[in-house]
Length: 94
Image (cartoon, rainbow, N blue to C red):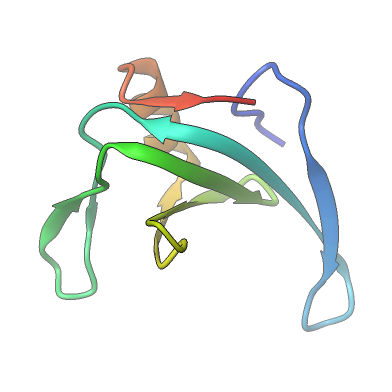
């Protein structure tokens, strides 16, 4: 599994619909620059600068959750998350 940071991981497991355990890792973070994604309508949008959560399930993709009540989210491939981190557009806080 590809780690997003060298900090200690907060891993939990949850049952899948097939009864198998799924490893989930959650990090607190902050968007500091342009991190874009395609919306359901196909328009390119940006995640707003500010606090967020990163949730990785089995290391394939990462859900980014933001908003005052966590009402917005998008799943991005791990490669896009790493590129944004390498460019300084997102920070992992734990």
